Length: 329
Image (spheres, helix red, strand yellow):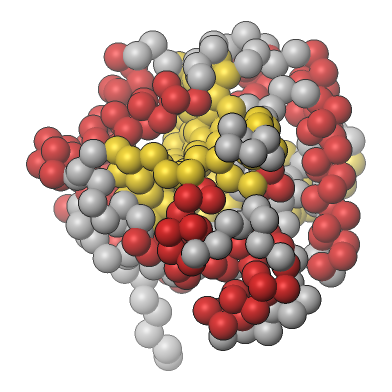
């Protein structure tokens, strides 16, 4: 009989430390008057983002046999709460992304997500920094260097000697192909930029402090607003990402509140999925209805709490801070 590995991927001692850090997260938000909420892991819509693979299942509901989607983050449900008048909220949510298994990923993981009505993006960046330093603790938190902000195009200029907004697509494809050892001759512009970002820029971020990247291409706005780059007036995304030790920890948005614009972006995503031969994902109509009703302006951020705990406890992979990572679930 084949022996089955039933053991947890984290030690019991590590799980005690994890519980202590999660309690610190809850205390952090309680002190700031941010309400903890719980929302469903199942929804009638999923993430249309072409870079995310949503999982779904068939379920029997009062409407009959329906397809429901395991949420890639609690974002859609939490925004509906914002529209209902919840005020500032946070959640430690079970989230799911198919195919994401490795030292930094797991198909099922915990997302820390919070929303701040009335907060400008800069205020949320400062709060994210405070939360990260709190979880790292007085030792590691104080050892991490200062927070530094980088414009997306500034990083490409320094690392690769090109402006990602103006470089011609053929040059971008050639460079991405050389760096990645892949055939990128037919690759889309954002795919080339993502590859170059992951190979040439991200590994060096967060080595001397907390690095925050802002002003991403407008095509990478996802559910964020857009604004004009003061340098040349190009549209850029009103969002940020936080890096520490080469790991992306958080992704924040000045949240899009325009229902018509959001509907159009969902449609663009599914059109891109069709072109790429990917399955379409059902659009969350209840989110769109909530946006039509009127969501307060503000900002929100999603933080991979497993990654942050991994860094705080100085572990080599997220599996070491999870009771049962995907291979042993």
